[in-house]
Length: 274
Length: 296
Image (cartoon, rainbow over all chains, first blue to last red; front, side, top):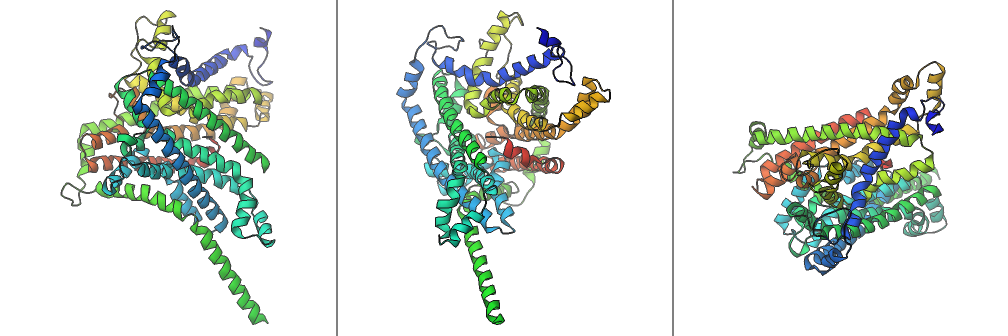
């Protein structure tokens, strides 16, 4: 254990003298990881009661989940809403980011402020506001209403991601393409888009997850046969703890990890290329 | 000749402006959507908060907030929880960021996966996991008793403890990321200079390193505090219905009492408080720098 007596860096106390720091850091890392990891073994437990480590293994909670009409319907709603949100938010967000970037108008900053507003306003206020308006125009419990509200929450994220990619993109390239006879649209699709595509895809993934994970707005405006997974899950957590949630949680963890790994990987690629 | 050139220049300028306006209109659909689903609804609630039952102008909803103790309690518990969460996030997050910032970059990046993992896990999944871990026969209580740390099961969930644990877990990455980024950018030569001038490692930390890392710490703390103010899901589930933060109170006013005026006024006050803190924060540190670098 001689390294304990060595200084941590040339100006610092020995490793041994700050062993507490390493132990604390390790414990905090464990604290951060524990909840994400625990649900996986939990979901394969045979027991009705939540015990860890499980005494017997089984797939009964997965069977329960896949055999439940309510959970299946909620899963379908959540996927539908998330995919539609992804399409709407990515399209509108990218258009806005590109338009504001290329137009270079003085009040573009103000418009950007409006588009980013949903991040700042407390979600609960947005949730009841949307609910109030939807009651009036009869959009409560509809997929359309859910997608519109979720798109509003996702547009700031897409706009931010794409805007920051455009900041490091040299617009002269597009000008060159147009001076060679390409139309603005053609120049965008063949010159600009290929170079910011990773950010656009990463924005799309984040938009999907924004909708898929969203709880508060879904609680207010989804319901009946169009209840989302998050709404059902929230209500289940308030009532009683059913291990079926562990099975579903594991599936959600896997899905989210895959999608986020993709978006992180692609996001890195974009910034590396400029 | 010069006259023609002048016309041409004017025409070009007009064309350029027209094109910029067309480009600008690309933001139309997004602006329209955000206006219809956010600005109009929130503006409407703002309006409602100033109306009484008969539809006349009144400040009764705001007055009630001052008079009725349950509203005052909701605000007090919200600020208390946000404050405690921020304080513990500093106490846990700063040392972690410090330790990580001194590791070789490759090792630190692997450890950063653990920091990002909560970001990657759905909020409800984590909330569920905490319910399982913290309950009376849960993992924490079983192991705590087995290891002799405490004798009988502790009440860790369905109360303030559970709410705090859940919120600290959610907020900790928001603290660690900006602090870590700031620490990485600190020039180590300052510490060498301090040591050279006779400062002990402890003194050099307090007088040189800590002040240099302060911008990240302040940014992280403010972000954590502001985000905490709007929490709804964690207190609702891990608080077991006993913890009523402002957002929970707003939901109850709608779900049980259909009192739009009361809920709206609470929401407006919450929003304005958030806005004031955010504005003060933006004058203090450049939050946007950390927000864009903060990952998902």
